[in-house]
Length: 234
Image (cartoon, rainbow, N blue to C red):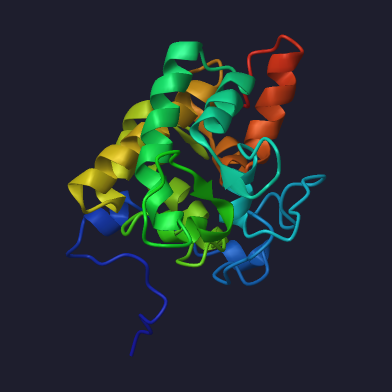
């Protein structure tokens, strides 16, 4: 009898042929399905981002920590604004996005039940603000699952390997998020990332997305912006 235990495609489900998943991850990345707490590796970077300091935070916390301007573990709207300006967004976009981000994420991360008029985001509790339905690259505790990033690109990077167009990025957001409010938020996040890190061909590379997850992309773009660059990654 033929062994189908490892099959990734079903003959009567065409979607499993158009959205293929990789079956060779373990050749280059040890335990690709194990959630990583401190690093964000992929098959090309099995140790994560070299030179990036995790500061003993989860990958999700690292993603947010760039915007904690005074390193006190709390991100206020004006700090989100300052971080967005630092990575190259104009004042109007930075103002709008900072209001949306802190407005949406503040309350779930608060240490108590009483809302704060200052809309702070507590980095230690950022996992509580994670979307209920998303790509799964972050697990519920804020760890990073490499296989889910690889599968995202193996399924949707159809024009160029390991690169997404804006349209396919929106398709990812639509497919992976079930709740309408999460879908809107996820599309906004994809649009922001696309504007920030698209390359000269108008595509978003897996490396840019990976480094967005651990926050090192923001550090990279801030340094480029400070030197007068454009903050793009190929």
